[in-house]
Image (cartoon, rainbow, N blue to C red; front, side):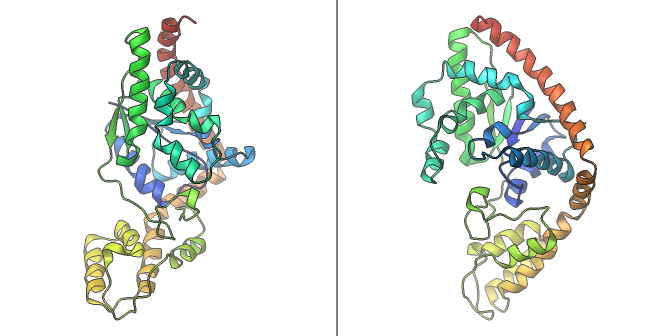
Length: 319
């Protein structure tokens, strides 16, 4: 089946991006026809720095490749390399009910965080629908809390089809059952907007510094601890083997293990887990033309896919 997903280049990719999306991408590229894109237009709702956006977009693509996304198996491209997607977004906006956009929780959540409620943020779901619908995507991988994004795309596609005929494919949410909730260093969900992230490709000393700063309680070493409420253990369990994970869980419950010991072991596990990816990332940084060629080839394939849909859309709407 055809799968589409994207990640915003609004900052350095981090452990939350990896366990929340990229790890699943690595599996899906062997099972489906996949389109993975860098959503740089979407990032403009919060990032208003041209050089930073350009740099972040390149870095995200390099991170994709370093972590194992294969351009021979999946189409990897920049959102902005498809001018057709903004054309489709405008066409879809002419039939999208205002009430539908006003009900979107992502908009309300970001406004509550203090982000300026401009038109781009409000119309974000229409552009997202264009991203999905232009490739006739059948499955869109999302966590349970992001299901509304796909439902809005379906609603818009259904409205378009009811007016112009059966043109657009209705996508289905592909709920990622194995998505881990990754806590940031402050205990909240790891997110660039909270400034609490740990990046896979940061310098080792920076990774160590951040992990050692993870928020914990004041329970003494000798006292029992609850692994289910510990931010350090929540990250540790993502990297440790089953036997090591169960051993540390037992020591938590019995007492006699300190948070500092688990943090130090977590530093080792994170660096080892991403060791090969970090080596590949360094090679790509030294040879940026490799990344540019992958994006150019991906854009060509993505535009071929988009052109098929846009021919039918233009014919249907009369332009």
